[in-house]
Length: 391
Image (cartoon, rainbow, N blue to C red):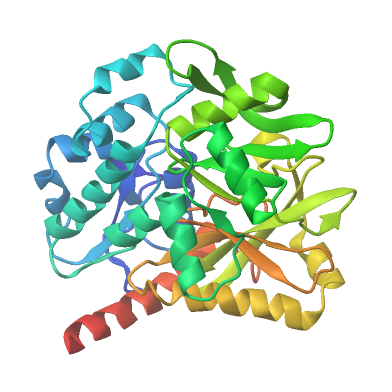
């Protein structure tokens, strides 16, 4: 599936981006939004190459750059079943057809992550040397792996929650929590997005409580998990069974760090970094421990939190965003999930996102996230070409 996204534009690009191709999902809000931003800025619309079609015939990508110049934007693969199957096959999965039993089912996504990284690596090899590419495979692979990303941020001195070693069962996790003096943790599928399958686990005096959007269906082995798109609370044996099922799929476990509160609930930030500089931020608040907007979190203005925080605390958070992003100069943009802690004087990073730029109704210096990226691209492309020539 390959087409231009948005209205027709001029055949030449006057500002140094050149013809743009998006490796992504045709008709997706992301690809349509970025192409529309190109057109508004006077560039030709982007061509979209579907991940599944690219995996089936990689040579078609190079043909989209007949002059050997331009931009390849790597975008999120989304959740389209045909794309997921293509990336699973590329990642070496041997049970792809089993995916037909339901789009909401949560699975260990090791093969999907490998397939996505392989697709990005293949795309970089397929385009002519004069084409700038927005992402590198190593960064995409790292950001999709919650355990490895947490370790990388920790190694760079960024404040992150304390992590626990991988546990094979709820009993092993409970013992590790007691040894570390923890009563509350987040149990996260190692690979995944959108808080799918994450459980906020508390060992309280009145029992065991887990809050999650995952629906646990008991069955063979440890049962089946589905992403229900709504939060639910599990108690006692049901909470144990849920956590056991998540751990069985390979999980990252980290301390549940108390976040600063706003409007009566905990809050955190999705913060977009473009070309190494922090840009758009959306504040997410919730009544419970998980703030994702598609799980009931409420969107708020990040400036409301910034107005309450000491300037030095906010500046320190942005400085850490710049410092970590600088490790990936060949990755045009990434996004962080980060929060100020209770007291508003410290910050803590939870995740980095390989894409994360679908941030609605937020502007930075008057521009939405896609318009801001389009404005920053010529300078970033020129800087990358200078580095490549010097190498």
